[in-house]
Image 1 (cartoon, rainbow, N blue to C red):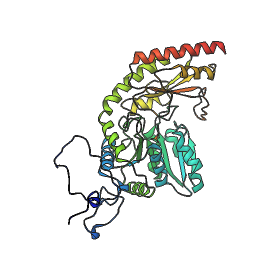
Image 2: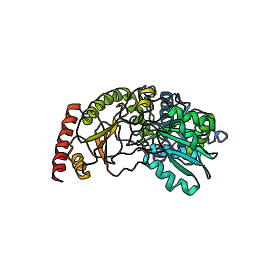
Image 3: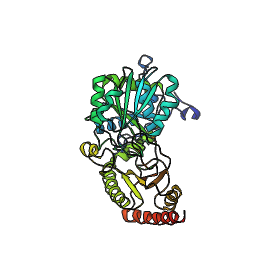
Image 4: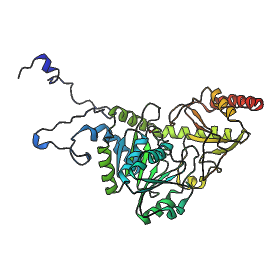
Length: 392
Ligand SMILES: *Cc1c(COP(=O)(O)O)cnc(C)c1O
């Protein structure tokens, strides 16, 4: 049928030659996906098993990223969601409902608790904060209506490493879902499933992305009933993701091993230097013995990564700590971590019920700069802090 040029814009006969074989996963964009016949038309969220029906449920690009994350984590299946917090939200929505009781470690990623308190509470979900070092003692907190136990190891900012196997063993007796935020280990330095977790999630934003230019999350699961609950909730909550972002994550994944190795080494060096400064009370880095739960890290992890915190002594004025961070040139001030740039962020009003600190904390992320340059930058910052501390 001869077509007018206007129709040719939509129904072209022209096409590039086939047979191009790149090493990169193609970026498939698409909302509508086509069926050959009306009889073939169907939509099912489970596009790893049913034919493609709609882009919301995944494109080959997103499903390849999902399969690769699941492969790395040793899980059954993985769902890619818009970011780490969306992964957390998905877990709550899949496994809780009115009347449910949730256990969340103190020190969990703060927006997780805020979601529970400000949104899920309105739907009748009750969240109880527990001591991250509770271990098997979690059994005493489990109620008949407990549906979900969160673990995050190490915790955000205060870096408590959890005894995940002890917690998940208690959970198995009671038959509730244990979900682990495994962002710190990039899903590879701590084997969540081998340590008993039912569900594991990551902010791919951090190490898999690796370059501070992308937001993405993942939820990986082994049990089929849990997979169904997550898959259905993900599709009904419409947590679709951009294939372009997934393409960046697939690229980031290729260099994950070299980045993690390098970051670990540089971070241990910089953290070790900070630990020696007289103003520093405690170093909160899982590989150092003074970090709460360090023994669990040594037992269960195969490495450490780039994020850690420093607790300053009580008598250091907060303004002096701020002046230190403001004086840094290579360390930039910003949230998130896991990229190539070193970052510093003060947390000067942090309240912790179970593991008290002076409350004067700076969290660092080490990037790919040379260690000597980072230490020189910190030396400059400490000189400013010392000037301030004397002046105050
Ligand atoms: C950053 C982070 C998240 C949230 O990830 P986003 O992609 O920024 O939403 C969740 N958990 C932990 C432990 C994180 O560090």
